[in-house]
Image 1 (cartoon, one colour):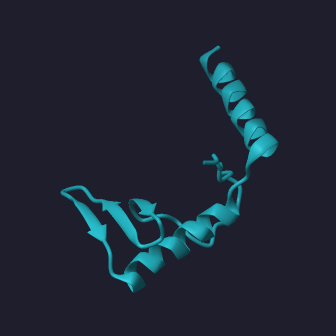
Image 2 (cartoon, rainbow, N blue to C red):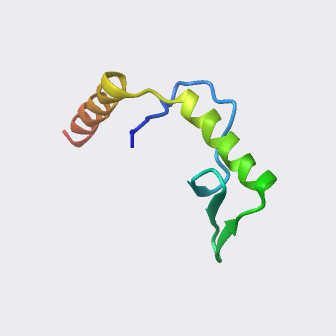
Length: 81
C-alpha cells in the first residue's frame, strides 16, 4: 500500500465523481448517497481501474507527499494563531 497526495495546484485530467474501491482489477465498489454499488462487469470495472490510474499519476509519493503534508500542517498552525 502507498499513500499518494494530489496537490491542489496540480492540473487534473480527472476529478473523481464518487468514492470507489477497486479489488483485484475485476471488481469495484462505488459509494453513492443512497447505496453501495458493486461493479463486476469487466468493461465497467476497467473504467474504474483507468480512473484510478489517472488519479495515481497525478499524485506525489514518499518525501514529496510528506513535504505537502508538513506544509499543510504548518498552514493550519498559522490559521489558528
